[in-house]
Length: 222
Ligand code: SF4
Image 1 (spheres, rainbow, N blue to C red):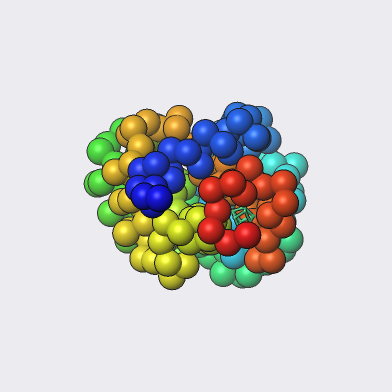
Image 2: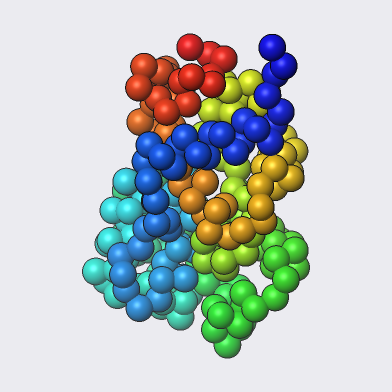
């Protein structure tokens, strides 16, 4: 039997995941006044940790009224680190938040910052200390509403097990496979990444739980 193409694997996986989990409505925010900055903060706090740990830190920042570029820029770094302790690597992340806030403060508003082509923005984001491709694309996709597909460790894990790629595939190579296979649509990219995360959390863990996984019928590793 003919092996499915990358495009077929990617489209079929989306359909199955969407059917199983439904709409994810990412990025989750606390519903405060500055959701775009909250998303940016979230992308940094969730680096190398589970979302629940980052979320506790965001709630802490919200209750201290700190989801604000000017306030993060001014706050004492040690105090900020203490407030985001639950997210892990808190000294490093406090420094990163302050650097990002200093950068964004150069613009009249976040909307003005994002009001440029994605490529230009991506380059600028990558020039900021502590922002790598995954964080930059998460910011662009979820805060900037730009069609940048986010690749993370979960994407590599699931799609290597499905036979689409090697587990250690280069970030941009896998990103290109997805972009070339899908309609360039922001909502679709937002949903797909969220569905991948859901599948990895519930089923495609380090030790996979394949039995009820929505991708089980098309998976090579079973
Ligand atoms: S069937 Fe198992 S290995 Fe394949 S994607 Fe699902 S959980 Fe992962």
